[in-house]
Image 1: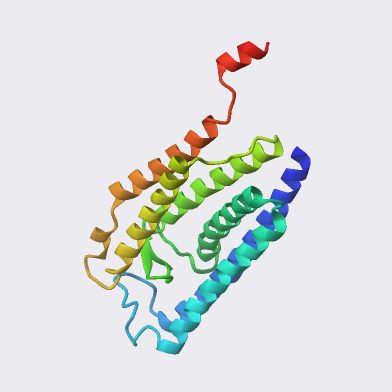
Image 2: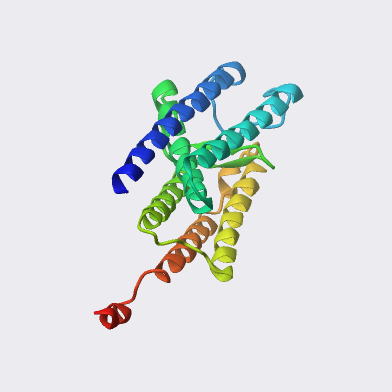
Length: 228
């Protein structure tokens, strides 16, 4: 069972890394077209100097297609809803991390983990230092591995209403923080509009709710003594 899981994770990782290269290659072309003098903040995200309406809508469509591909892949790799959710987190995390790895290889960017980037355009523009999405992706990767490891041992996570609400609320807070910062991507003081304290709170809350759910599934020391 463990060998089968490791083999499947390797295959999924290869898919995610290759997909990340495709994504980063598109960005290389876009930056060559729209930022020949270098990509930097503050950035005029919505101005006609950067992108026309047709290309802007095409880019949104590409991002939507990216989500469809990830959802399709996790549906194929996972055998049940738990596994599919875990594989979605796993693919997204590996894809996002290696997206920046490939950009570093291809463009030498980011120069610093604190360089700002436009992360997403759906439903609004997301922006933040590169460090923030990398931290989120590492967290998602941890969640995915825990879920799949427990699932392979027939320990199934079924979050209660409190844990699930708290987890989703933490994720929503992260999205709001990214979108709020994205509103000011064209402003000279853009760096002041991403809340690191809010980010840390959302991250800690998400991890706490997740592992709170996991800990409720594991046998306590008292129950182990009773079974002996």
